[in-house]
Image (tube, rainbow, N blue to C red; front, top):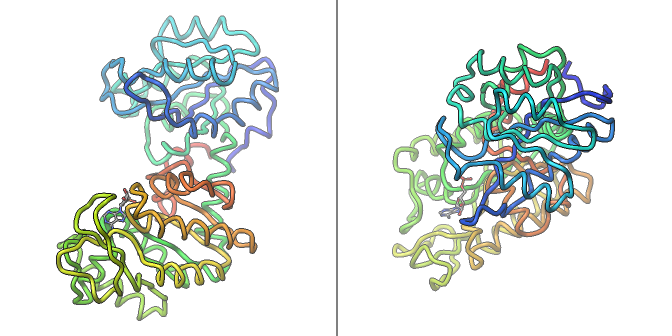
Length: 395
Ligand code: AMP
């Protein structure tokens, strides 16, 4: 069994916590989205309220094993001080003498934040010596970085072999709870909504969902490869030539297994891949040869929303259109609204990480669904039925 941090009391203890502070920064090194910092707060607060001292460690960006000020966690330390009013002791390296003495001298009510783990190539290489250096900072370890749990790195996997106690943080537990609800303990009707740009990254997910779902709704850019497999005109829409055959097979498998694979029935398309490009909406079998499919149309919204609203379990991964452009965001927004309705109706509704999470946040419905995952790749792999090394290491 994975132990929850709620099963223990950290009074007087220093606790090494892997968090996911891989936040976006602007050109002036200001944090532009604090979702991930906020998501870790319940765990940080629990340790502090017990009277323990959290030693936070994270990666930021891809510095490729080299020290690079562009990827320093200093702006995150500054952000926590300024926005949350906490005293943060920042270390200029995540291991070594300085880190050890900062940890040693940290006082109750304070936090330690270690510099970017990925300044050392040994982090991603899951080097045992590096893991030991991390474990030297504390023999109590908590993993709250679900977004990194699909990687066997020193801070997510290796370090667990050198600590006396290991726990899952509250964010990690919540992710595992809701993703288990949609992969194992789901209630039917179970509807999956799969969108985004390409089929390529989502084949394994679609195959896995085929075993479980009653309905799979397809939207976004991948729609057009399915249309092509059906012999339809798709104009200049996104196409994965080498996946046409696969799309045809998926349609066939769904039919054979009595799974309702639903594609958009109308499409909003534009001349150019631009927000202000003139757009028209046509039925799916009438997409003009000179246009790019950018969003689902209103008939599709009605069709998809009806299915979603009657579901008992809904899993959503990938936007329905180019939602970053306001003129092509309506389809994705309407699906978010249908998710809200289904949740109010008693359904378990889960939004996968990455772009669908960004979309539901953008439209302000993130509080209206059961769970929005903080992990893009990690949530996809969990849904595919893969074991996540960062989760497994906590057993
Ligand atoms: P993914 O990372 O595969 O989930 O894809 C997300 C991206 O798909 C978003 O940036 C959307 O803008 C993009 N997308 C959604 N619909 C379309 C479309 N019809 N054509 C091109 N890109 C799209």
